[in-house]
Length: 200
Image 1: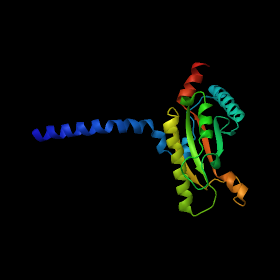
Image 2 (image 1 turned 90 degrees about the vertical axis):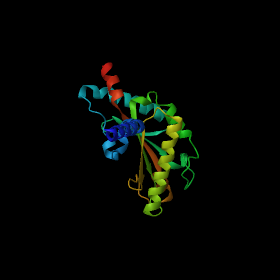
Image 3 (image 1 turned 180 degrees about the vertical axis):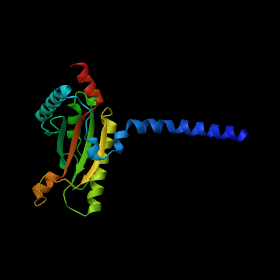
């Protein structure tokens, strides 16, 4: 009986110590998903889709007016903001050297709690596979850490893309500079969709 009570106490202690981590894991459950899975927005009835697209269009116009390059995917429900790597990092460095673009983005999203943000870091084809994986991983972690410190209400999920998705052929210095970029996918979450439903 004494042995059973000791095990029960030990189990309670383990649960108590682990509970904060379990809660954290539930809050960040999207972080374990593959990139393509995280691109999906919550289920949306057709009658509410126009509200999401209008909201995204307004945000996209606002960001374009601030100098960002913005495009849309999935019928206008998701925005992609592209920032050249040299506006964030010095050449071959992994520590953020310039945070102006990140701060400007943060300051021009009125309701960040309405979104999930995927951070996709890209590089050109220079170097071997390990180098390309490492530099995009280290850089996107630096950006993730920046958001954690300076934009705490942003739900950001980092992805290192290496050189897997060039936007132009890597056949010149200019083209390589275009492929070195951070893409920020701005994806509506349940909170935004509920807001649209409530105001429909």
